Amino acid sequence: MSSSPKRVALVTGGSRGIGLGIALALAESGFDLAINGVRDEADVAGSLTTLRKRGATAFYFQGDVSSPEDRTSMLDGIREEFGRLDVLVNNAGVAPKVRADILEATEESFDRVLGINLKGPYFLTQGAARWMIEQRSADANFRGVIVNISSVSATEASINRGDYCISKAGVAMATQLWAHRLAEFGIAVYEIRPGIIHTDMSAAVAEKYDRLIANGLTVENRWGEPEDVGRAVAMLARGDLTYATGNVLNIDGGLTLRRL
Ligand code: NAP
Image (cartoon, rainbow, N blue to C red; front, side, top):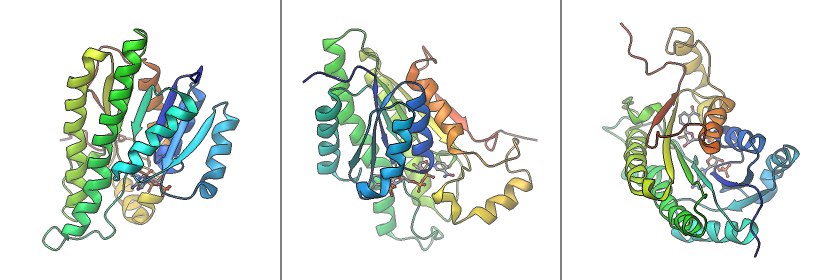
């Protein structure tokens, strides 16, 4: 089977929110797109149309990133449709269903959040990396890129969503491990830590963040938008940042800037 002439990126959770912002920025940078999510394909038709209007060949691969079978069938599907994978963006993620104090929070929530936010991207990276190494051995010019979307919660402790914070701190270590392991194959691995970004995930707590931002939570006095994260990922995927594997980009309007 012949492979796609353009570089191909897989964006998990790529049909809405930050993931769609990333997929759109990649389409504008000349990538073809594989997007993933758990909803039915019929529900993401609008996102696929928007990506195609930006010049990308785009397909949807439904699957739960926490399921080994779904991860395998996603990568198999991309092999079948595109014949290549150049960029993996581990973006799919969930907040806990209930923001519960860590004295009360359940193991069930911990297992769900860690399964989707940490185990899923860790092992999807393993599967994608094996394929990227194969591509690199067939073509010395192959340049693989992996970007993990973690969060300011990798370092900022929120005691009403400990499971989420731990999952994102784990993603930070996973980034370092994979950057170390994959450098010899020319595969760069980066982490992006978004701050407060306008999406469905943050909608439930929008009033709280409106108030905090008005009171100086960030030094750039506004919400972040999915396009802010999209631009950063596109820069990394294009290879504009060199000799810098393992780096962390804070796309947070200065939320984590130390101040006095
Ligand atoms: P969102 O609007 O809730 O979208 C989440 C996306 O993840 C959806 O596309 C969803 O798929 C997908 N998803 C959820 N569970 C999945 C699973 N088990 N398997 C595959 N896909 C799954 O969230 P968002 O705000 O864009 O967040 C995207 C990433 O950024 C997450 O990792 C989040 O932790 C991180 N982040 C967000 C913020 C923020 O303020 N919004 C800040 C820092 C970090 P469906 O569309 O099919 O439901």
